[in-house]
Length: 195
Image 1 (cartoon, rainbow, N blue to C red):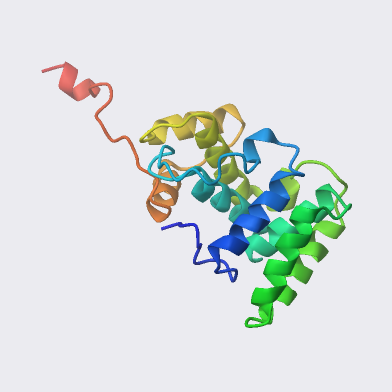
Image 2: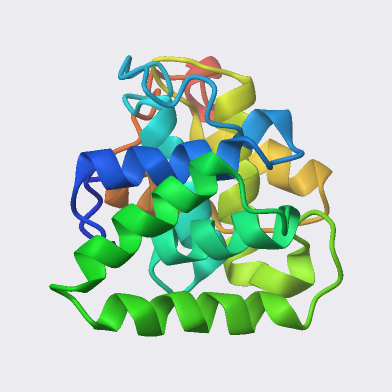
């Protein structure tokens, strides 16, 4: 389950996580991925809050790198001018790094990952096919808040974008991240209509 103190992150303090979200939000050109409502804890995205969905997106983009280290590096890549919000986020990050030295290494890995790419939005080539479809689903959820999503709805979205993903993989992804699925029966099967 994803929560605001994501278990996949070394950054444990909710205050530090919020500072990183604010720093990234002020530079993020994609309005959909800004932090504007990340403090809203309403679980309107298939049982997840906006912040939880944003963390899942950043985790997918970061790959094996700590997502909050990635967010700090991404904020720097988007805007090299240090803002008060980014300085506050860096300070919070490095204060926690005193207790967890691996955090400095994670930030270095994130900066190294992003160094070779030109400025602009995150591309499919940067994150890879295995993560790209997940990011597409999560962004779709942010655009279409619902209490639950149909697997077929996700499969149709991916197919329309040229991606063929097995519905079992989509279901497994939803189960892993506690995304509520709408499993009400759809059209009756051909067998049921011939009775």
